[in-house]
Image (cartoon, rainbow, N blue to C red):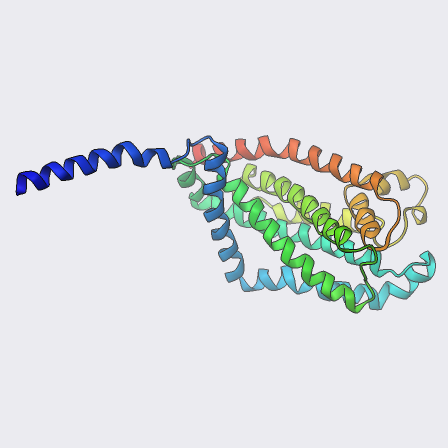
Length: 285
């Protein structure tokens, strides 16, 4: 009986060894990237939700800022442009919320590099881009939730979808595409910088410049002539104008093309430095 049991165990073990590995995708495959990014993205979301101050800042503060913009600047902007300022303010604040939330995530990544977490992940038999992809996925989840909250708050100040369901979905997609590109850029900078580097001041300064020099507050024609080409073609302006057109109507194709071009450019200049930063973080540890 023992011999029979031992033989059965050996057969079962041999069967497991020959069949189990077929369920494990190759480390460098797209399937491995997808399967391994999802649980890591779940970890990022849990960390974000448990960080109450950051959660409030990312979800509540943008909505309050939008209402303050309307109270302080709304009538003046509306009188100057002839259009409800909500159609510029709401897209602007959605993009700003995406940007500043990504800065917080980049700061967390830089801290985790200092703890050696990235080095431990790098030696595991997982796809090399899984952690970066998981962070971008978690950023997309955050931006999606923030966008819905801000659209609800925007309804209170007069923002409406007048073009139907399809354009409304398109507006959310523009926010997600812009947010994904900016998140990838900030993560690349964070993982490439030394632990403890002053990421927030530099990224905050760049984001503030983009925030104040775009078409969300006032039309491009209201800026000085020499500044108008810069304002019209910086990354935020075409995204804001595309979102405005998707909500209220107007020219769209040119702005979507510019959004696509900026997205491709930012991703191209970000992905390789990000992966190189992960390798450097693993070696330095």
